[in-house]
Length: 166
Image (cartoon, helix red, strand yellow):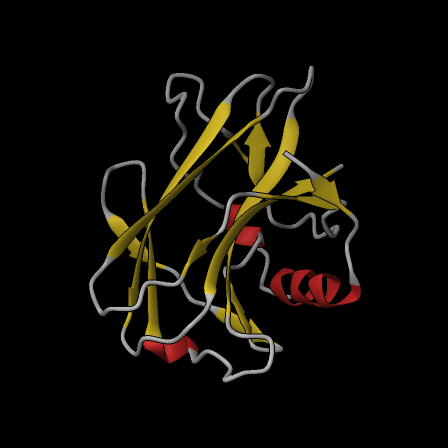
């Protein structure tokens, strides 16, 4: 897994995501359910220090729901504060994606599905970081499951990533 510097457009997305109201969040699904991730208060609004890009996939070309899953393992010796994020990127030269034409749902710990609102900036759709922020303990794995449905098919890429905080 590679890390990268925060570039200006990415920083703008992070700042937009951090502008959400402060709330305390429930923990997302964890592959290591016995230990489960600790809840983090969203009152701490420091921006991410870096991102780990996970494998991308093309945007589906039909109107059927598609499963999108990914994992991130904390291989460090200490706990990490992280936030999973899904970016849905359209073609560089447009047309820009319409958040109303895409449905993204996340699977909760109880197996139910929750619709996620999508923010939009410079043609990229994204999920908020703050509601997803939590502590991932050393040597634990976070597993996320999403359902993505395009109501109006468009070319693009699904790009999951993990925001890392100090």
